[in-house]
Image 1 (cartoon, helix red, strand yellow):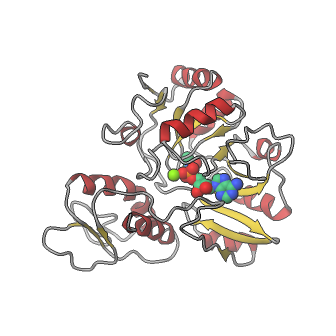
Image 2 (cartoon, rainbow, N blue to C red):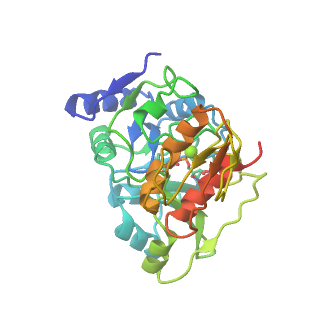
Length: 315
Ligand code: TXA
Ligand code: MG
C-alpha cells in the first residue's frame, strides 16, 4: 500500500474522508498526538487499525466525534460527565462512559466492554475531518503498538518502525501542540477516577468537579480495561529518570536549562510535554543510554512522568 501524504486543505480533507468511507485508515492530527483513524461503525475498518498497529485486540480504542451532541448519541452521560464535557471539550479529555445500546459502534472498538472511551478533539484538522466524514472515528495513537506516540506526520511515517505503507494516508497538519495523549477519566460506583494522566491536568478537572479524583492503580500484568501496559512508549535505549548529573556516554534530556536536547529551557511543563516524544525519538537515534532530568510532579508533569516511567520500564 502506498501511503498518501495529504495537506489539511479542502482537497486533502475530501480525499481523507473518501478513504475513511471506504473503510481505510488515515492518520489524523489532533492537538495531543496523531491518531490512526477508521470508521468506528465499520468492523473491518477497525480491524485494519489493529492490524496496521500490530495492537493486541484486548486494548479498546477511543472514539472521536465532532461535538457533545454526537457523543450523546454514543454514550450515556451523567450530569457530572456532561459538566466535564462542557468545560473541556473540544480538548485533551477522554471520558469512559456507558455505551448506548443503539450507538452503532463496532464491538471491536470497545473490545466487547459495555463502556466506551470518547472525546471531541480541538485540533482544527481533526474537527474538519470529522465534519467532512460525518461520523465517529475510532483512533488510537498512530504508532506501532508499544512504541512512542507520534506528534508529527514524519513520526507517523518513520521508516524505522512507523506506519508508512501500512495505512492509506496521513493528514499532515504539523506538530501537535499538546504533545501527550488525552487525560482519561471514568467513574466507578459514582466516583470519578483518573484512568490515565494526560494533556489536561488533573488539577483543572478536580476544580471543575469540585471534588478529588480517585487514582486508578492498574495491575500492570493484566491490562484489563485501560490497557495500560507498563512497558509502553518504548525507545530502544535504556532510560534513567530523575538524573541531575548524567554519566559520561549518556544522552541527557535536560529540563529548566538551555541545551541541545532540553525539554524546556525555562522549565515550562506545557513546552516539555509538546517536545517529549520528539526528543525521546531523537535521543533514541543517537544509540546511547538516555538520562532524563527530574520533572516536577504536578500539572502536565504528571503525564510527562507517567510516559517517562513507561519508557523506562523493563521489557
Ligand atoms: O490523545 C489521545 O487520547 C490519542 C488521540 C489520538 O486521541 N489517542 C490515544 O489512544 O492515546 P490510545 O488507543 O493510544 O489509548 C487509548 C486508551 C488505552 O489505554 C485504552 O485501553 C483506553 O484508552 N480505553 C479505551 N476504551 C476504554 C474503555 N472502555 N475503558 C477503559 N479504558 C479504555
Ligand atoms: Mg497509544
